Length: 253
Image (cartoon, rainbow, N blue to C red; front, side, top):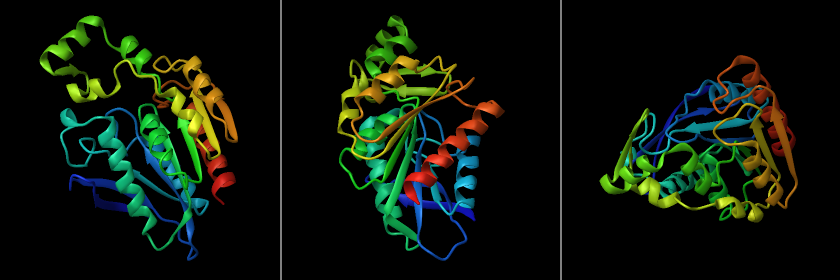
């Protein structure tokens, strides 16, 4: 069973999500899904993952960060630390759900969402397991690879930058420019899976391996053949769902 939920963040903005609830009457584990930069909860792989986990008696909450998807807020005014606060609000919400085993909550994060999740779990060690897809923790490298010098200069001068998805405010840049959050991975204490696509041109393989090497807890690194950064193609997406389901069944059941 899946349906919409609405909760408030620390700014009293509505965060909208979709909750997948298994039919069983016993308390079940839950996975919180954190999307990437200006994405949303409706990505096909999120939907398919939620439905597959539901079949295996694991609940899922996929939600939109403020300013994204159906949630309230202006993306131009948000930054990394606002999204961490959003995740904290979601975590508090799911812990109060009566059908959830609050000791068996995991997080699945993608791309920029991996920074949000990593910084969050380093304050909330009770998270049972963590999955990082295409960990984008090295923003110092990624900002320079994704934007030209001219674009960054314009961004700083005008306090915004227009990209394909829309307008990004200066708060987003100032929160991550010249910062490499990779060392935060050393603080991870729970079982962690790092996943990457063999054809990812946004977050290079070396960055995924760099994060993986810094994790000191039980960990596993998996490459998805022919997967790019979006995992929109059928076969890589199918393999990704299989890998994620297997991991969460192992770590949360």
